[in-house]
Amino acid sequence: QVQLVESGGGLVQAGGSLRLSCVASGSIFSISAMGWYRQAPGKQRELVAAVTSGGVTNYADSARGRFTISRDSAGNTVYLQMNSLKPEDTAVYSCYADRVRVGVPTAYTYWGQGTQVTVSS
Image 1 (cartoon, helix red, strand yellow):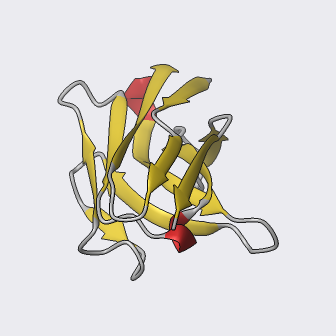
Image 2 (cartoon, one colour; image 1 turned 45 degrees about the vertical axis):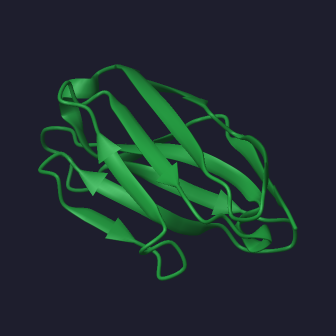
């Protein structure tokens, strides 16, 4: 099992910055990737950014150049530094972690509770 606790959401003006944090506990040794999805009202959930246990990162086009994902050396905390925020970044941001299991071909995904990010114009 993996538990995820997020923090760092809030209200910010356009052009401002926020940093989201997600702390994983439990079977963190088997986490292969962590990242962030977001979902705005009336829209589909979309991947914002992800980082693998090997440090490979992936960003949505909308996030690339403005957001930076990083992971601490212990591998149990992932950060999302969001700069130059826009009103269209307003959404609930959810942390996820993919956990691999021996003998199982697909990873299992755990989710955090979500944190609201609101960017005012």
